[in-house]
Length: 143
Image 1 (cartoon, rainbow, N blue to C red):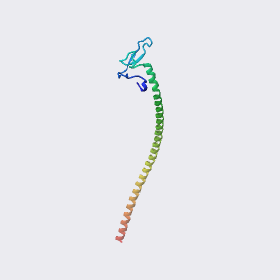
Image 2 (cartoon, helix red, strand yellow):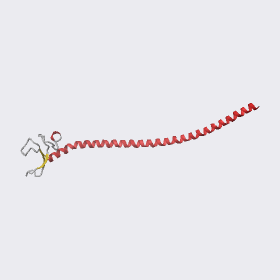
Image 3 (tube, one colour):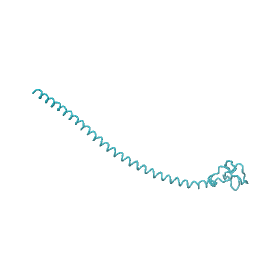
Image 4 (cartoon, rainbow, N blue to C red):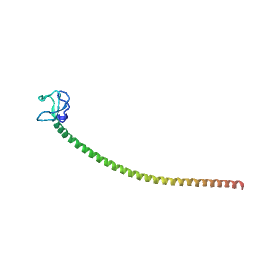
């Protein structure tokens, strides 16, 4: 049994497990009850409780729990909506970042081509410089 002796009984005060029986009386024909194996219809010291009354108590005790679960479920649904919204926002930011990165990559390829051009121009200038130095040396030693 739950708190305050409510709900379905599990044990008798004597320590024996409760078990389910069916009434065979004229007043309560086929009505289910929980009882102690050591008790009888006149024994007040042992467990006796109608099962339908236990069922009503169990249901009454479940109502606040169900209300709490419904509240928790609503809170979780709201939290899930917030998470989904945040995920959508992050997905949009990711797409924006991907576009920016793509732009940077194109710009980098342009810089690499420009750098290659500068290297070729520098090689050409170096070759011209070598030719000029050689011509100056030839001019100085020949004349």
